[in-house]
Length: 199
Image (cartoon, rainbow, N blue to C red; front, top):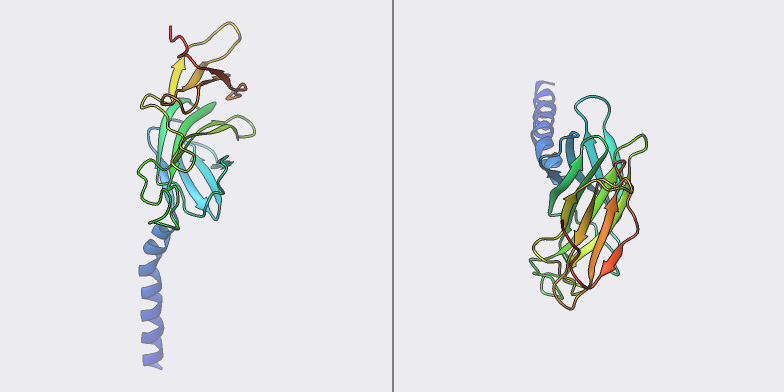
């Protein structure tokens, strides 16, 4: 009887010891410096979820889309960076995925660029994504400049808080501009082959 108890206790101890490892196995990436709360990207199969834990209140979970001509795999993002934020109203950030994680030696398998997207998420009464745009892609030969995405925080007469500028290396795609409203709503893209004015 004592041996069975010791065996059960040992198995229980092993189970608890493995919990941190199991938690680490669930892919999660933190977006640093978000003032609206702790912001974490979690991967659930092919779906990426933004989870924001506010300083007060319950957690927000927003499903993100990643539009591309290539189907997204089940590997989560490798990194994420805050671009801009209007605390408790919207957050703008990028996330990056490996281009072809299932085929290391294949097309883009060892690419350092990866597939990078920019997102805008509205944090109002019904939190939701208002923009998801592919801005870097080894698979599609799309390369943003080192300044992209650029956030110009400037209110205008139309009521927008600012604009996101995506500029690309010469010959890949024209400059694209999105205007962002105070509630996180985003206009359709405006494209211009010349760089937009920044004054």
